[in-house]
Amino acid sequence: MPDDLPAQLESSLHGRCAIERELVGGGLARVFLAHDRALDRRVVIKLLSPELAAGLSAKRFEREIRLAASLQPANIVPLLEAGHVGELPHYTMPFVEGLSLRERLERGGRPALEQTIGILRDVARALAYAHEHHVVHRDIKPENVLLSGEAAVVTDFGIAKAISAAASGSHAGAPNVSTVTQAGTAVGTPAYMAPEQLSGDPAVDHRADLYSFGCLAYELLAGQPPFKGSLQALFAAHLSESAVPIGERCPACPPPLARTIMQCLEKEPGSRPDSAREILRALDGVLAPATGFARLRQRLSRRQRMAALGGLAAASLGVAWLLTSGRAPTGSLAKTSVAVIPFCNLTGDSTDEYLVDGIADELAHRAGQAPAPASRVAQLELPLQRSARLGR
Image (tube, rainbow, N blue to C red):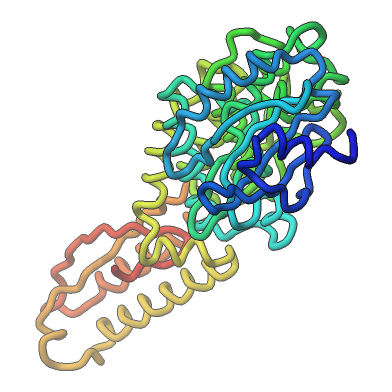
């Protein structure tokens, strides 16, 4: 690219923006930070690379950008305008302070479970709004999710579609390895691409974004995307291999969330959730009970949860021993009924069953030996997850 490209870019914008510096970009575009003189704010200008721009219709690209620019919800970084410098299309968006999700993963590792669910909800909200306005992203990945304050926002909405619509010649039709390497934005990013994108299906719709969302969610929770390897290996895996269940790689993942993620990763679009709204409802359901002891359970390791269960068992047996040994304090306790408490294991983890059943059986046995005045037994069913629930 010519060294005077920033000056050419300023000229194409008719002096409305002053280029401040070039930001780190990829092989697909050069990215510039600029000052919008009219509104006194910073903006980002992305200029497509010559390799990607080759064969594109600048007018068709700008026409597609206008559709994406109509998206204005809180969780989508809006597109402000599009143009071109010579034959190179560019587009402008607001500058977002903060890290991309990719930078967050590389610098700080995986976020905590609650923060992960919050990020996924924000992304799902962005997808739901865009899909309801007939815009498909086609390139959902950590690089395109920005963390700003307490919110996650999705950037580059509609860009992949605009590039595909403006493409001609070798960029059209089914993708091949070289196309993905040189013009990945046109068809997506291999680690997150839906099978129908890889096969060049012209009927790709919003459900491709749901597959990519599943890949992103999987990586946030497991620390890696569902499939890894060379381009050829990724293509083969997305087309024909089943991902390792997320629950095996992230035991702390709530089962409803695990089911939703694995449904998103179904090969057939019709087997995935119907919409991002459905995913959003599932995420809301995961958050709803995440209070009190359920939240404590999410923060404890398996060893800590088992220790908590053991502590509950010891405390329960201690109470039973006091009752049956005649050493219970006088007063209101001596006049109350003895409660036998069967616990329900709601985790789906069969390894917790022995302790759950043991607590209930031992309490029932001890209560059955209590003196006559306290022989009345009441049944009270309380849920028990991997951590002990003593109350709310």
